[in-house]
Image (cartoon, rainbow, N blue to C red; front, side):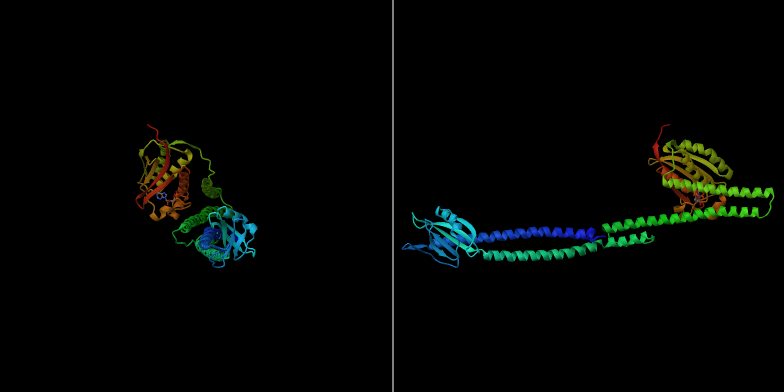
Length: 458
Ligand code: ADP
């Protein structure tokens, strides 16, 4: 990444701009004020000097004399603009002619101009009445070199301190930006390692600032990814295992049948077994395909208004037969008249999977009961059994694909460990979910919660 595109560089530049701009403005204002003050003081000094001169002027035998002081420039012109006196550096008359005229007309004025030697001088011209008929013009001037020297020293100080501040601010800004963004580098490194396949890594940033929050959000995301990958791996392993068993049976049975000549009854028995295993496999594959279509959102669902009570009544004949066969009593609790929006066929499959489990995992003499009520704006279908129950530690996993609490027993019972995964996935497709409460040895209750469409009266 080019340095110019990095946040560190941009932060430093902005930081510098934020410091340099006010600094330059402050320097310019200070310089301007200082310069203005120095020149104003000079003008005041010139005015004072003129006043002193006026007080000390004497005329004797048409000769003007006055108190002399320093190396000030002094020019005295008579009413005809003829130079009467000159002290100090000289200036060209053509330049000051206008101010001399103005002074003779009674108006004072200032002017900055170069002397004949090329140095700048500030001039002040003022009228002076020698008597009621004679007016002369007095011009005093002082070189501005002192002010210019002072201003140039001030300029140097300002420029050097600005450069020092810029340098310090640049280094400090870079240091601060580096320090602040260090966790980002750490996050990038971890993300790279995770990208290379190590999902067990976590970002170790404990701060409570924005970066700390980002780190904990990313950590949660990585944990979810890790869990998803882990589940996927487990699923692939379980699926292969699940399909390998019937395949091994088919292979063994067919090898045995082909081994030597068999009787028709023996061939029939072998083919029966092969067909049974093939049916089992195709059932697993069918269910897996269904789940894959749910995951991909490609399962065509025929959403319509479904009366859950009617759907349950329809199901009950099948379920009652199943329960009777197993010696389990099947009861209906309260059944409210509730409507949901859903795919009738899939909802039927959802309820059947849960009811089928309830009967399967309830020993003979037990009871399975169901109810349908409205709760918090949802249809609440509860299916309870007095069966074997589910251990608390297994509860979080029972909706996982191929998960069985008792692995050995379920295969012989015909359970594939996919029924609840499909039920959960159908509930999710309908915007609902399934909750479970269970106690080992006492029984389980599954609550299927579906968003209500409306509650028809009657
Ligand atoms: P299976 O086809 O094995 O029944 P499911 O996905 O339907 O698979 O259920 C997963 C596991 O949850 C079952 O193997 C069983 O151990 C447990 N289970 C589900 N329903 C019940 C229930 N009503 N009572 C006890 N255990 C249950």
